[in-house]
Length: 173
Image (cartoon, rainbow, N blue to C red; front, side, top):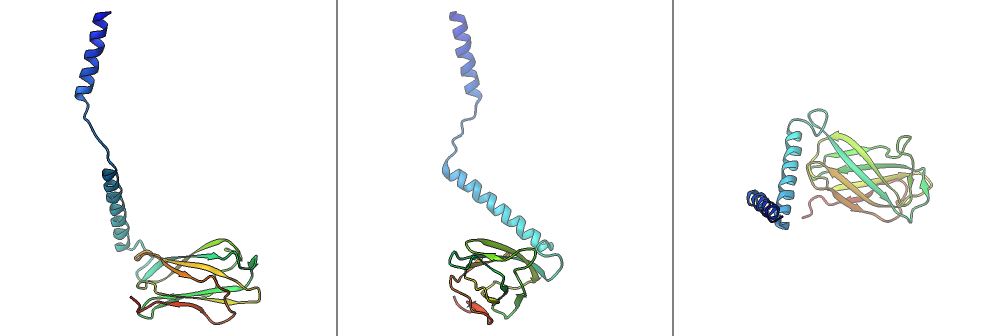
């Protein structure tokens, strides 16, 4: 029994003497995550350089997310259009966001729209247009351009029928 105890003790010592001690700290995890994020961002940028951002030269894809307020009517059948642009005057107009594929805007809901179009610089203005009789209260609109951080436009008020209602932050610091 004494020999068995010595053999087990010796085996444990040998196993642990060959093990490499590692101490994972929060800083190391954060550095690894940061490195991984930087690598992912670099891959995204490289993809853009070879035309991955759009399907042809001069075409880009944008994502528009619209959250409808809980103060809005239950749903609206109104025609909702959108215009966004950059500080150089380049604009993209989406004639109708609602439709057979997306359905009507419903209160307390969020809808996303992929918008292909010409490439523009950083989005700094956005206008919504409503045409109809139901009424609609958008809460927020977030415009995602894959070259820049998302831009948030806060509404949370009833959109009037007809003229565009929105924001022009172009030229502001």
